Amino acid sequence: MRRRSGDAAQFKDPKKLVAYAGLDPGVHSSGKFTASSSRISKRGSKRLRRALYVAVQCGLRKGVNERLKAYYDKKRKEGKPYKVVVIACANKLLHHVHAILVKGEPYKA
Picture 1 (cartoon, rainbow, N blue to C red):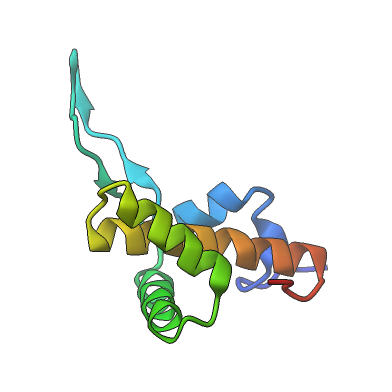
Picture 2: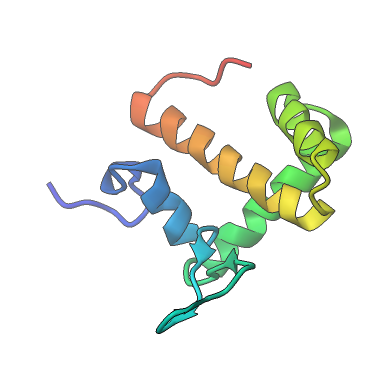
């Protein structure tokens, strides 16, 4: 059976799906130098990354996903900037989506 490009089974690990979305941290190093700050790699699907970002913003604004809102509040209390926290929430949301698609069970909040 041939796999389709939208099949979640092609990603055995949720971290691979995160990398596909380009939400994984990019490592900047050369020789002995290693950058102190890291940014997302942006190597993956621009559309998926944008959809996740907007979904998180809307979900936080409406307060629909209580788990995500609690995670957002926790990270903000740690002193993280808004956009950094939204990307972290998008990463967490993508982990939830992967679990839902692989297990084939509905999301339980």
